[in-house]
Amino acid sequence: MKKLLVLTVLFSANVFATPVNINTADAQKIASSLSGFGLKKAQAVIDYRTKNGQFKTLDDLNKVSGIGDKTIEKIKADVLFSDATPVASVPAAPSSSETPNAKKTSPATQSK
Image (cartoon, rainbow, N blue to C red; front, side, top):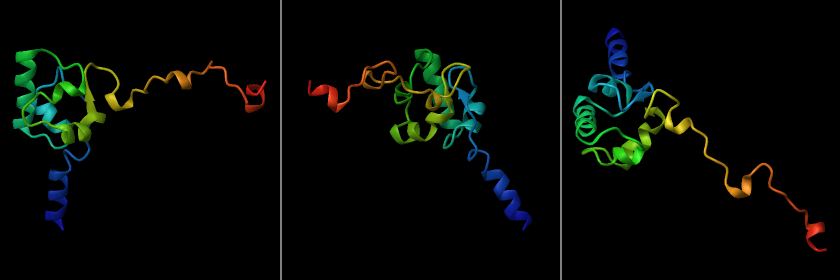
C-alpha cells in the first residue's frame, strides 16, 4: 500500500498542471507545470525562446522541435504569454451576429 501511495505522489506531479508563463519560466518550472513536458522538451522551449524571442501565440510553440498540435491542445489551458489569464480562459470576441446591440427582427416585421 505504501508503494502505491509513493508512486501516486511521484507520478501526479504533471497530472495537475498549473498555468505557467512560457516566456519567463525556466525549464524546471515548464516541465513541472505542463502535462507531457519533461526537462528535454522544456529546454527546447527555452532554447527556441532565447534564439527567436518571446512566444506570442500557441502557434509559435509549433515551431519548437518536439511540440505539435496534439501537445499544444493538451497544454493550451495552462500556457501564459504574460502574467495574466491562461489562453484557454480568455473568452472569444462575439461575432457580428452575436453583437449585444444587434437589431433583431421578427418574422412578422420582415413581411412588411
